Length: 594
Ligand SMILES: [Zn+2]
Image 1 (cartoon, helix red, strand yellow):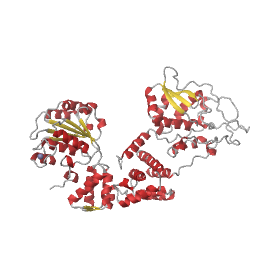
Image 2 (cartoon, helix red, strand yellow):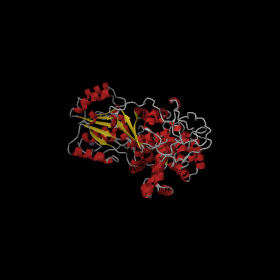
Image 3 (spheres, protein in one colour):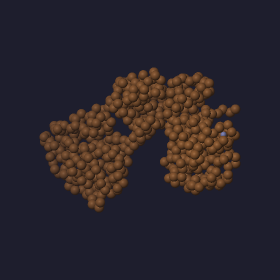
Image 4 (cartoon, helix red, strand yellow):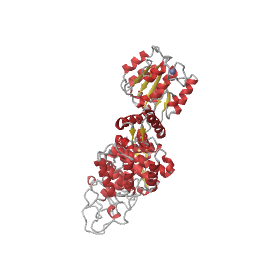
């Protein structure tokens, strides 16, 4: 007999056999029991969580010779035919390859013919979200009023892509990821049925890698059996999974916890030369640190899915650190994971982010450096990196870097006391002005207005700020300044809503303002009503920058137009991805190796 994959061989046979979806199976069983069967179901959920298996069990339940019954016999010819995939009236359609309007027209004709041998004609449409729009429209009519002998089960991993017209015509069930405990249990059972042996740790590794999908878990087990024969060890599984094992995670974590920078570089060397996959490593590290966090909060009992030895090891590591540090580390790793998608410098990113987690970041520039040192070393090139680098450190990240009360006087007199206004073109960089001793102080509304175009130019230097610049900053302009409260005006209610509804955007905008203008503004935004329309007002006589009077009268030349500071590496709007990732991590439904 041809080889049958474990997943197909051990497909669930009835509702009680389906793992981890009791909320679905119970409802379906009750509906069958009370004769309230719908003509269209929508099964949503991650892949490998039992959607098509459930659809087949439903087909059996309704068509069993003893049925309709919630407990199909699995022995009658109908049950057997459905189980083996031979039933002529159970039609499985892959919408990914039959997605066009013609396919749907054909379907529409076919549904009218009564079933050949079963009680119901059963259409299981997999990945239904892949249908084209025309196909959906063609399908809609059928779905609305199918003949009484037809039942549709639509399956999708992505219900958001379905038109509302489809959603509203189906009874919807959401499938959950299957817990590691359930998967572990099932794997042990399958191994036992097959007469194999497997190490406990190997099962844990498989269950973890399967990420809530039983099909993936069984496919991996299949693969492991092909590779290792009938006695499967943890090492076999590691070989299959690409070799990021708990030992490596533990070693990496130890190095970081001990702030051993030298050791870190050495370890990264080994990781790279061993050909490990950096994004996968980072994904696994996120899981590992999340487990440490769980151990921090719930003690060893929180780590039920691990072996006792692993639990001891992980609680030991958890004890060396604390919750805020772990949370910060996870945040940074999520950020790194996100950046790894776009950035080919994988090794560098791994090192940089690890150093950041260790706290070995460039120390906040000492005051003397941040102070105006116009000629040799524009303060601006140093200062702006701080807010970004320190974002996740501690609450102090929000403060502007401390400035000296008075700038270093002698050799670097910033500017003679010379009120003559410079030509507008030669004054590109307000950032090069003596850093204001404190918030806002020297900024007036006219000066802000005048500098706004330069501010947007400055933002162009960072691709990461492109969205913020094009969607927000270029669509608004300073309208009032009272104290440190800067009100921006925009013509678009949408622009306003983006700032108002998404606090991170406002936060990043304020950070950019701070980096560029060296002053902390509290930003609000309003929709312009007919008044001010000029984002870039005509040049008005701008009060010359107000530097501290230079005590030395040598009239040092005006500092050359200083290159505007490098924009801070503020990761917005990528932050949304990071935020999403954090949500996943903490809801426990993480994609391990994405
Ligand atoms: Zn039967």
